[in-house]
Image (tube, each protein chain N blue to C red):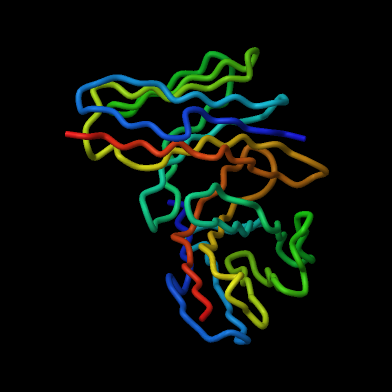
Length: 116
Length: 113
């Protein structure tokens, strides 16, 4: 159990395009979802935490107008990279948990975003 | 601020040898995780360690936790090529009602035939 599906797995698009990435918990209700960014050969950096039905909490240095996060249901969160530029190219990984307190995070398969 | 340090960052070893990856963290934590990441892939959960003295083993990998020393180890026994990957430790902390995972920089393990 605890499967998290992330879609798409890879996207290549032109500069200026907005890109939406979906993260779904398939067999559990995810009260909290997390979005991470990983640069090549680097570790994961938490971008934001979202709780179902409320606004996302962004980490310092992450532009909330650039990276729009919506967590409208207990099984779906979306990350939209608005007006993407080449520097936004990265590997984006979501995770989901049943909530705070002794609930592990389950990771999606990641999305490779390439902006030309 | 919670910091997580892993060493070594790069590890090249021969098949059949043993080695240990270390993970130090700076403040008390609720849980410690070990993950594996293959190139171009997401994270695969290996172990979660909850309490002082916890030891878990899966195949050729064994993880332990010393909360007093704020240290976790991932021991590799008789390495095989299939273990080549990047290994991350991560420590979670509940801050202000939300939970955050802080990752180490990762250890890239290459097992040579």
